[in-house]
Image (tube, rainbow, N blue to C red):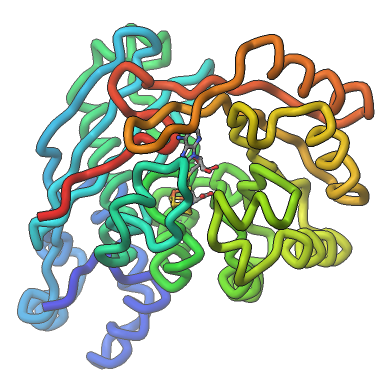
Length: 354
Ligand code: SAH
Ligand code: SF4
């Protein structure tokens, strides 16, 4: 059986044609799946009986289930623990922010990159998520929101609000799973699907150059967020092993090239770690390394994870670092992670292996 949620609308159109039916049926099937949230959209009576019968034989909707949910007492964010149909587990985090509802989603079960400060990295990679498992996270979050109108009231958002922004900043390195992520994004931005703007979706990468090339080929204006964390080659390789394969400098060059081709500004993330990357000298080096790149920087104070001895700098150090960048005219913000009390903050997403 094929998981219907894995199919882009173009793929579904091809299927309709292969069954000798017009491609246009894919539009209604998509609308019923994603807008009406039907779990057997072929039964809606709007496609020919023969096509509905064929689909019933070949397709199913494989939704994960929300096995746990935790609400943060401080910022109203909600962490979902999802059980996949094979028993695998991933997390997604719903974060209300002014007029937006941002969902932080996972792209893999675990992660192969092994960054030393990251809990998910310590799990290793169990497997990639399918496109269907990626879009399911949005589907389930929207279903949860619809069932909790009181929560929308608490966060002062209009009734009927749904997820408006997506960040691929949950478990996994999304560009290690480009096929799944690109198909998922196509479904998320499809006007018959979730109808989100591509500008409302950010894909965060530790600097996977092959993946960057592959995603730009398919979605040239996709918004990337790059996790920098150090511009010193030796130090970065120590905390982010991916730097040994694709040194930061080559990644920054590639991003500059894409901007010359018309790509928009990029977000740089810089997790601040005491004594590792938090000196004013580090800030000057950072400013130099990103010259010529249209970028803004989010400084993320390290969320200390028990498995490592790394700690978070004090507020004064973070402020001095910020000031150096600010004085150079760089757009920089200190971002405290949401959901810290429910272990939903950056780098805290970890699920025990089966
Ligand atoms: N794999 C991707 C996306 C997931 S991680 C990436 O690395 O970019 C999302 C962000 O959280 C990344 O910037 C990552 O470096 C950061 N992060 C990981 N562990 C963290 C921690 N313990 N404290 C603060 N940020 C962390
Ligand atoms: Fe993977 Fe990102 Fe964690 Fe590094 S920070 S181990 S790339 S999830």
